[in-house]
Length: 398
Ligand code: C5P
Image 1 (cartoon, rainbow, N blue to C red):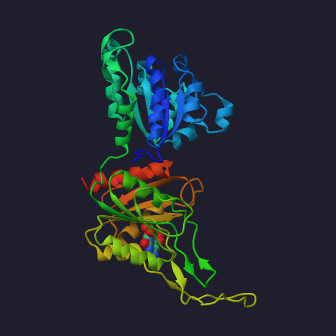
Image 2 (image 1 turned 90 degrees about the vertical axis):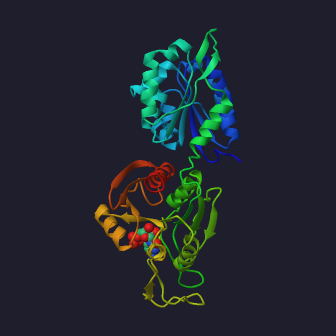
Image 3 (image 1 turned 45 degrees about the vertical axis):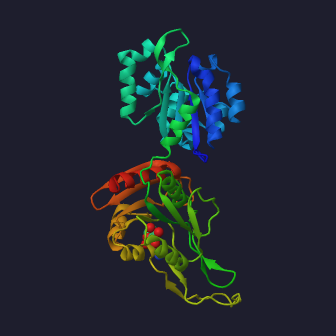
């Protein structure tokens, strides 16, 4: 199985003799299904040619912070947001020190500061440099910030010394990277997720619906799969591809979504209602296409069932997470929905903004439950979904 399918990885290469092994790291990451973009520091180019990395990754190598042509394509902030993981291999002692101080004097340094993605570092340096208290303190600081250390290995070094400081072998780096995405936080749990819009037929050719893209619900499904859960995704009509390794139930109307939700939630641990359900449906669906009837027409509508409330009511022990898309007084309305719909928690989403929310690739939300409120600042929906799943799992299932 490709453990890194659909994962986007920036491989940062810094100056050191181990840089030649980073070519192999690109290959192994790709073998596991990852999409790789390479960013090199100027010192790295002294050890391995950017052209080699470009040919292997299939994309131009990024190296210059002040390159206007590159910025016109995928700029450094965009690149930082694109990634699911920033992997720095090899990471020199100097670059590690720069990370500790948050320096942004290189493209890689700027990406390190700007990315909401996970960061992993495979150090490579002489054994004396590695054992220096300054290096050890730097590693400690990065670990405390949540950076994953991969290696280093012990053994004979390029300079002839023997000891710790060699970069880990590419295979071992890639297997540790894979395990970062399989955190097992929800292993053995069943998660049901509703996503996308519903469509309410008026007649055989027309319907009422909304602009939901399904991206947030699909990203949550992918994150739950990554966390080891058995995932059932109940989706309305959308134009995006469902994540691998989850059961997909395609529905059209709110009533279909309700039936599928009640059936699948009965033995689930977590229910996440990310769908934008149509509030109303036609009181009667015409058998034949409705003909034009003068300058105006009236359609009689009736309220759709509230799916998430019905699921919460039927399953008192289920953890139920809802969404509140609001344009004003976001937190107040979200708290009101939390109570009224008997949810365990709610994600509040300001949809008055055009850069986040509906249809956008990014989102910025708050997690609200009865005892806390946590803001998740703007990031890709993929990353946000992982952060939400991690927050949910750590807060309620560990
Ligand atoms: O009431 P409102 O649509 O704002 O509530 C949003 C939350 O309720 C979302 O989690 C949405 O998926 C869920 N919902 C539902 N069934 C409905 C309406 C909303 O499950 N009919």
